[in-house]
Image (cartoon, rainbow, N blue to C red; front, top):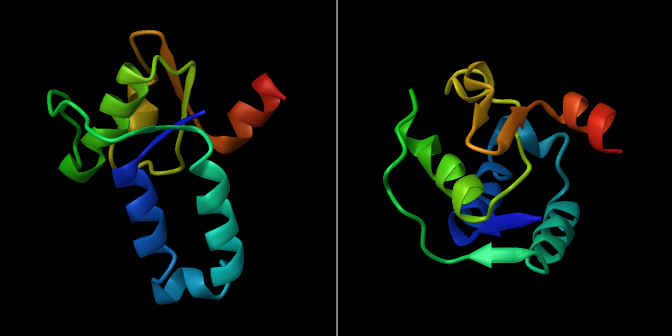
Length: 102
């Protein structure tokens, strides 16, 4: 598993959104972030990837630098799922990932 400082910060920030607070308990988010910090945590990422949502370009950089097999996302707005892959990395939904990898 590969993550980045930026992704961990985004998870913390997004978990405070009112629409997520009803389903994401702060203690569970904290445990998840702590567990993710045991993965490979990339501190710096290249800024060479373009997406429809510039705030999501770091996800492509993270996948490429980390040589990830999968990039799992549910965000259809950024066009990542429509892209389908980046080099060796397949871009899939959580359901697709579970069906293939587990």
